[in-house]
Image (cartoon, rainbow over all chains, first blue to last red; front, side, top):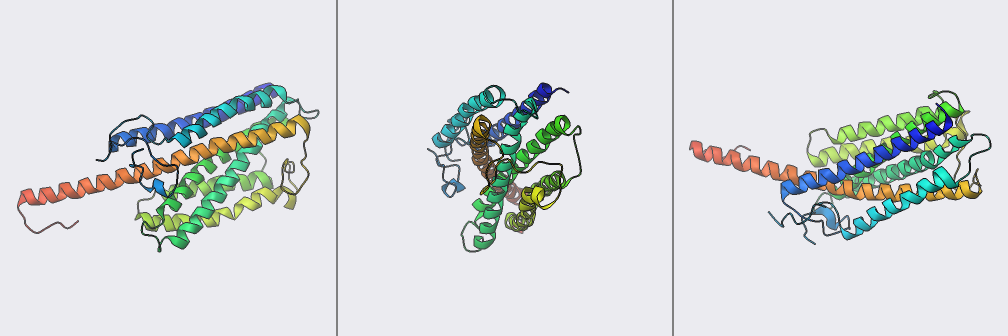
Length: 56
Length: 260
């Protein structure tokens, strides 16, 4: 594999991995949120985040 | 059930949206700098562009494992004193470890590809590579331990102990290139040491570290909230199960009360 092909493969795989994981996290949050019937999380604070059912 | 389904962004807040937008916005210049603006290396040629993914990935992985250990330590120290058992520390440890494992995997993959071009082989069992793969496997084990069915507090304590044991390997990975003779080059960036690279390469690397850190922070916050949502769902399912068992007993007319 040439240098350019190696670089393209490395960057491509990295972005695919990060994008796939990000989508999985966001979709899982949406799915479980829908199951629980809750909306946005109203806090960015980790202590207050203990209950994400807090409405904004 | 509190609240309604008023948004599709179940784990988002205005602050995390800003963080997410910042991550996406920072990625475009990173690609431009890493693949086009920064020069090719005199020795390594175009292959040096792997540096802008490989180094930020391992730095973010180190940072995530530091956060995992710190949170685990706080969980062990405070779990008995807090009314909620300090479970937010456990959640933070779990979410950070998962991000750390993701970026360790990226480090290994980009390193293997880079090694094929510069060393002529994908893999060598030298000190840096071996300790890094060990790091990956131990934290994978940590994540597996977190999924074992057990009382959340007991599971949290077991996971916290394992996180602290696993962390011992982090400085070993980092200093392996100084402690042993390895095929792997010395650290490109290190605290208290003059950087091995300069100019556009140096700034591109710093910018890439910053960008990947923002991405990891966004992922950690979201993963934390998803873990909390999973816990809420499990608690709700358990309550429903207990309630249905009670109803069954009542319908049967046994009158012996529930045994749950």
